[in-house]
Image 1 (cartoon, one colour):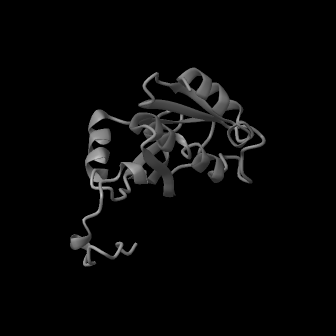
Image 2 (tube, rainbow, N blue to C red; image 1 turned 90 degrees about the horizontal axis):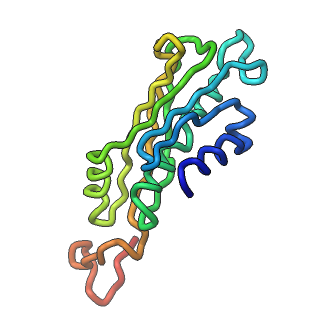
Length: 168
């Protein structure tokens, strides 16, 4: 799917649409994504600022989608976990930028070359219109080659005999 269709699809996907989250830019190489969230009556909390769940949700699928598009079909890519620190009240329009570099992709490929899983972490800053840091999110992903792409296991390295399959 190209970036324009993905942006349209994501912007109308109910969890994003009804939270007020909007992808404002997806680069054609899926290495840069910009997202915004406008404060509305339906996504504000009791004290009139952005609902924390909406701030957290605006960071949810992006790195997973970016890695899936850049690493290709030979990898499993899943969100594994995340942590958010709320640093200032979010009001008005808030935004987040997601970026993946060639170096990051190469590092992930190196870490998964042996067939093992890798859990890269990405930090995302959510900023308001004055560039004040509203929240910082650390997202952990799970990346691993699919079984048909993993190198064969050497059973002698895992303490099992050649006749016995390795224990998982």
